[in-house]
Amino acid sequence: MKIFTKKSELKEFLSNQKADGKSIGFVPTMGALHQGHLSLIKRAKEKNDIGVVSIFVNPTQFDNKEDLDKYPKTFDNDVLLLESVNCDVLFFPSVEEIYAENITSEKFDFDGLEHQMEGKFRDGHFDGVGTIVKALFEIVEPDTAYFGRKDFQQLQIIHKLVEKHNIPVKIKGRPIFREEDGLAMSSRNVRLTKEHREAAPFIYKTLKKARKKFGAKSAKELTEWVEKKLKKHPLLELEYFTIADEQTLETATIIEPNKKYRAFIAVFAGDIRLIDNISLKRKH
Ligand code: PAF
Image (cartoon, rainbow, N blue to C red):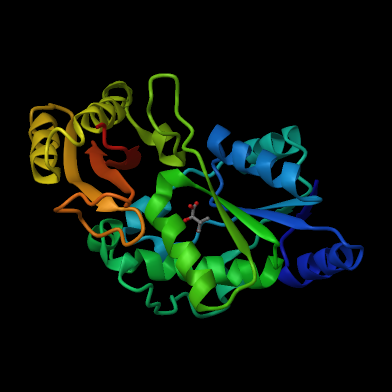
């Protein structure tokens, strides 16, 4: 695997590959890689000639300094994992290489997607995500980029980013990877205490129960049911639970036929904020 830290060198390498007719599949990450990331990289490799991964803990998408400082950094292990799935190229730039002197975000209008859910609780988060993903797309110029559906709102925002800015990259969303007990894989999971780690699968269990009740209960009743369940839990604190339209991400009050809905949740397990979501289908 080739490792680049300078954008100019990466660009030169990739433009030679493109000149040889090779397609580029790209997986942007913040490192601390897990099986979810590896599945994206495997997919990128299956569908393209060259698989490129970036590892960059992007400071502008963190609204909380402590979360940024404590974000897990496991570079040596990440390299081993990337080599195990035959990743071709790793881009590992410094903050200066990406932002020079100006560590700030561009301001984006994602047609309101940015004001829902995570946008309400993480100030400026999606401006930071938009800034870095746009910058990385300009550097890598991939044919296709792969993102996990665990960050479903982020995925929809990236679809909107490429659409509104005419960026010629195909965006592919991929399934959520889960631990055996159902907890959605996340780089932040390693920061959970033992007792919070044991408690955390309750989140997905609750989502699955909510999915079963969808259709029989109204969106409001279901939301209240989840809120009550979480309130009773001694170790988990609910930030939000929302049933939203998959396209607009607006909270659904009335469930309309021919629309797709998803339940979204954010929970604190001690200091660690966990998010998850599940697709909802009505039973008739
Ligand atoms: O999902 C992530 O890991 C990050 O938000 C991303 C897309 C790599 C941008 O920093």
